[in-house]
Image (cartoon, rainbow over the protein chains, first blue to last red):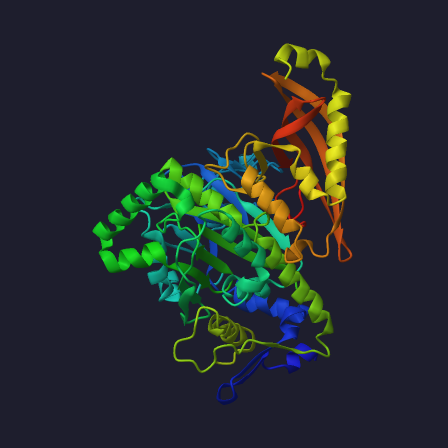
Length: 423
Length: 168
């Protein structure tokens, strides 16, 4: 029996004393990672991609999701398909391009040809196979066990018996609605993927993505920049709340002084920008009434969907997902999400805004990378210095956006998955 | 300023190389404010995402870096602070520049391409960035000023570098 098997929780919690601690072993132990693969990544709904990435029949992307190679394609009828990217014959990866448009998929090893939906069309030497070989479902590329969508966000799950995506998301859906409703004609992924990595445990990025507490110190230079750029700030103070959305999901919803392309104007966007944002805001009021329009336009949301999807609707909208390659290494993919009907002006300023803060070349994310890598280094002392503290805001009736409620929500659910201890 | 014809006759590849080698030295010695002075007032500095076409625009595509001159100056200001945590203490870098070619003349400007390998080392970890640079240079008083620098990474994304916190 190894040490991990003797553990029955990674948390030390005492509500009355406002104690909430997480064992640093959770960030370094290979046995924990193995348990996460089996009990989280093999069991939970995972983000695959956005419908807009496959605009027309034949479009495809290949992507690593939960350790599998997935071929995500739009078939000839326009239906989206999520297939395991492996030949049913002898296992080779069938599609070897990252994205593109195809009429069929051919495995180059022995030349088997599959339709856009993964159905075997032909294979060299067909006469040497059983007469009904092509009718057997086992001759086709295998579909992922479960594949469901919400508002063009497509998810897969490798556990056939999992609850529906809709039930899994629960109250998250309302926040996805608020984010997606900023577009009248739907949201789209903008061209270009940010693919990067960190020498840190994947759960550190979960914490960081919904951490309102670190902004003033970790991102001091970003805030300096906003102050020195003429007209980069609206007269708005940081203020807002955090919410536990159940099942490990959580959200921060708050006001912040940066410009929002839908729709919080800042002076540096000038009169043209003011007209554009007024038009967008008026459109929201017309569609949803003033209260909801204000929420969509002027509030920011850092939305976390368990176990590894972050949709941040901040100075731009980013969709980010990440997977562990080792206890101390993760791979991250991030995209920009925007309203389909957005004007050239708005798209340009949205992307300019995005890069100011977000991504591995921005003025903020590199410092997050540094912080998380420094945490991972600190965990080398975890045999002696054993605990992380995430108790900020415990016992408050209305936890603030810069408290740590949302992290406690994540960890409680994580702990339940790993140790089967009810949260 | 010379006209295009004169410029074409007098600019040798070695002149461009001298300039690019000097640029690399400023970066490796962390003399970033001096490096910034190499740029014109309307200059741009781009690092596109690696799944985009080489001439993609940051107005409708997601890049890693898309700085105008103002934001580039802010990037330099930021990198010189102790609170730019990703680069504190400063990483050590070596920018290697080779395969320099003058591609074409556009009015007074020249378009130049080069290949680069940049090593960055910090906290016992060394990362390698490699790719090509596309410059638009303005010949000026016997040297050049940079109007555009576009760094095209050859790697698939930023794995394992994780960030472009240095200037490429």
